[in-house]
Length: 70
Image (cartoon, rainbow, N blue to C red):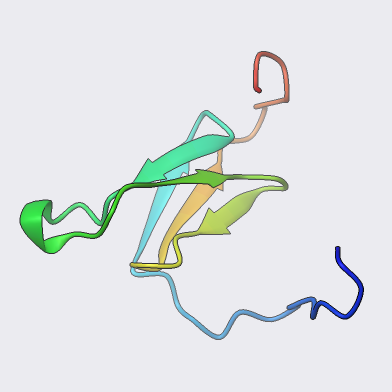
């Protein structure tokens, strides 16, 4: 982490939806077609990641490891 960068330990945003995935990379476009948001690729480093646009929470399924991931 760069010097002086703040580390967030509490996320006050509630997820709009929880999606369980088998890959450490998740693609999110908001899911609403033309009313969604630009597609972003989210990297799950620990066990979950939240989309900064729509607050969907992507949770890594148990038993998934780093094998085969880039």
